[in-house]
Image (cartoon, rainbow, N blue to C red; front, side, top):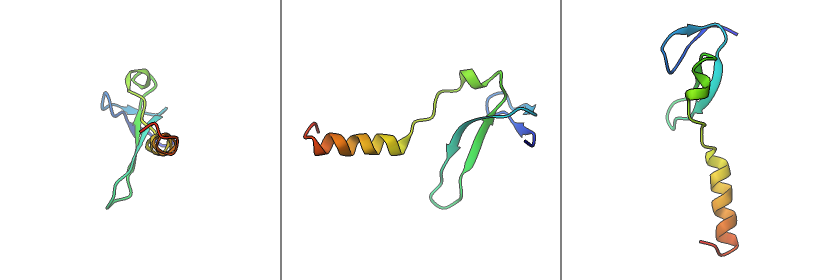
Length: 64
């Protein structure tokens, strides 16, 4: 894999860890990388599609 810049410490890393995938409405989006040392300190990305599916199921079952 090509070297990437860590999103947390702004240092180049030759072992990037993918921590998020950002989506954009008008542009393609981007992948967010960190170095292995910073990866445990980055909050987990929320899965928007899983949240939408859970809300739909809750609505169908009358919980909302």
